[in-house]
Every structure is written in structure tokens, then in C-alpha cells.
Length: 118
Length: 111
Image (cartoon, rainbow over all chains, first blue to last red; front, side):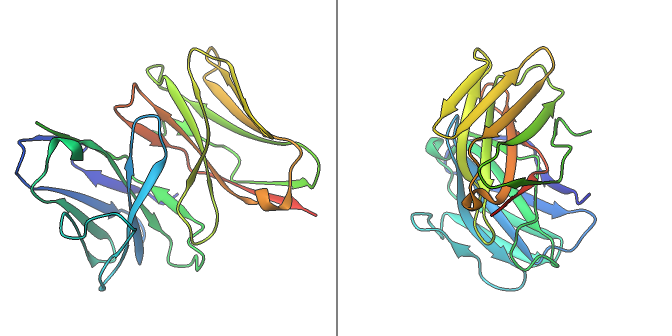
């Protein structure tokens, strides 16, 4: 099956620094990748939809300047949390959609990244 | 090595009957389990969850059963409706630190 990786799996940073999280589709080309934020015991929140070669589409309430998304190639999307604060501490998950699936029904999730901002 | 498995990629059920979606996990540190439902062109939405201290949680037509000794959980939908047709993801968490998703099962409810 399709494999999606994320790096790093865990990161601890100081308040005010920026953190970059990578999401890679290892054995397929993903024209569309999704970034989610998981709150403990709560819903998975879609942050943005990332399309290769174009600007990401952000969900309402998600700050574009704070969560920078770059989908530079068909196998890599990055999420940069700029000027991170403790309230940004969370579990961030990406998923990638197979290009053959026009309805994005086939989504493969990455293993997630645990961000802790001190 | 998949920590969360959904061995049935697809399932078809007649409207009005029961749908049973299964999920197996390997990590004994998982203490919280969630089910998500996903429609085409939308992100997954939270459906129901269960803590490891329980063996059953019910919410309307949806019931989740947890068998810790077998490391198995299942989602029952009864009665099934055509609007339930979607992809269902099982997810497991270890004390809120990490969340691992299964590959999903596509449910088709036939009218």
C-alpha cells in the first residue's frame, strides 16, 4: 500500500522559534496533501489542503502566516510553524491522496509529529 | 509494521442491516481509540471514541466495542443507512501522545 512518512516524529523547541515538519509520499506521487492537527481525545482538525505547485487552501480560523505550507514537489509537503508558542503544542498529521482518486477518497496518513513548545 | 490494522478494505451492507467494521492493534500502550468517518472530498470527521477502561460505548446508531485482551475493536452501525456510505478510519492513541491511524474501510450501504 501507499506509504506516507513524516519527519521529525517528535520535536521540542523553545517559544519563538520556527519548526518545519516534512511529509513525504514514499512510493507514489501525491498531487494533494492534507495537514491536520490532533487535539487530545478530540476531533482531527483539518488545517489546510496542499496542492503541488500552488498555494495551500487554509481552513477557516487557521493562520496562514503562522502555519506556512509548501508543496514543492509531488512527493513532499512541508508545514512550518513560525514563532511557535506553547499553545501550538500538538500532534500534527499529514495525509496524501492518490492522484488517481478524483474524490480524494483514498487518503493515506503519515505517522504524525508531536510538537512540544516550551 | 502497522500498529493499527483494518483488514477489510471494503464492506457492502444492505440498508437497514447491521454494519460491522473491525480494527486490530498491536501496541498494548494504546489507551484510547477513535473512529472517524470520511466522505469524498472532505476531511475525516470524528464519530465515536472509547477509553481502554471501557468495553463498550454507544451513541445513537453507533456502538464501539473494545476487547483489550484480543487487541480488537469494532464499530457497529445499526440500522445502516445509505448516508453512512463513507470510508471509516480507526485510530489509536497512547495517552494522547501519538495517534496512529488504520488504512480505512470503505463502507457501501446499498438501498
